[in-house]
Length: 257
Length: 257
DNA sequence: CGAAGTTTTGAGGACCTTCAAAAGTTGTGG
DNA sequence: CCACAACTTTTGAAGGTCCTCAAAACTTCG
Image 1: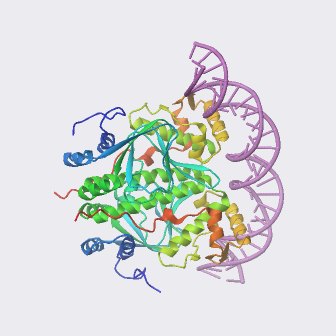
Image 2: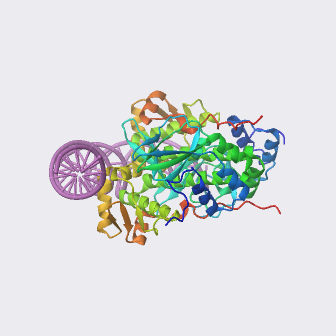
Image 3: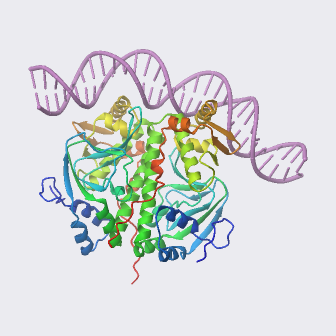
């Protein structure tokens, strides 16, 4: 059920979901928590397949996924799109907006999505006053960068089948991290064209790669749900190693007691 | 701390080069500067094509390029290598080591290189005590992530010629940023196999892509020097837009005067 | 129940890879 | 300073992975 108190239907926009994520990684003092939770957040409800931020937009708010699914992407002149990352409930999408002035990529929804935004200046002020939070934001950015690195490897050096398999493994893991599914079943709220944009492939070839994985009894799909039938096999195919997702949290701050 | 020009031949290892980079981006107070410069750094001199950090190594020091050229990379089981980023003199390679415990990628040199390392715990302590520095480190990590995003687009959606062109443009810009060359000529201290590893191509096809660019009078090469003959043409081919390198520095901290 | 969107199939072709060898360059020791 | 080995670049040829285009089958949703 709702082990996450966060809900798209609560009246007051709160960042509890993100705090919960931070707390999984390292202890946060009550004062810091109060300070963070007192940030004035705005909720934005978006339909499916809506652009929330466009490349080149000036940005002065950080955003956070309350419910739904969004991706960040860049586009080429010929219309080609590369998805750079997916963001699940509890993820900060846009933490970098606190320091960078212009979006160098777009953000769009894949399902009806509820997003909370906070003024970038508020985030910055908080980071300046609470070193604990500054470290948490920095860590978040580091994990972000680690995921981008893995994606560069994915599109740069893996075969089509491996790329798709790797994406499925990442999503299964991340849904598991936020308490959805058991690391085997998860809602794949993407059409095959989205998977193509994320893996640098054509939609047709994504389809064929999925068929291969179904044929090999690696995965099963029913509607929007994916079930990983043979987790070891899929991980071996994808050369998936979950360490890049850094579930363990940051190195602890050296205490000077 | 005396102002000393960065040099591979100075006796005392100092991080002046990095401070210079930070100062280009935003003002740093004298006390902060002193604190940073008093970090105990170790110098390591490496020959060409040496592994400095291997994937999976436990890391507890952050490293910084004093002189030379290094790359970060990941490898596949079949030996395939994907270079994730290059680091020029003045760059922090490894800032993420301050919070992450294990290297999720290797680091190796491409020419004889001098690297300075600092204890991760010292960096963390400094970040906790000097919000200015915490913000600078965070910004550095954000720019890192922005470059990874651009590389994901590069290997994911661009053609071979575009990928190689884009890499050359990036290097020309970055050498220019650190005062080497004029944005047109720069030392390409890589063999074609390295370019292949960075762009997700085969060495043979990199060779053919370079020949194409030479044939179109976009670039000229003489030994290890590359000269961009037609900057507009190369930028148009690569769809290069330098904004992802974020030369302008971070959003300023809101002053509460 | 029809319209729009999505997945699947087929066929042909482009881009890039692999393998192999020749040509050119760099570095080293005698 | 030359000779030779090791490395790097270049060329050629054959082949595979993945793409594009197009249409059919299936699903979702108003």
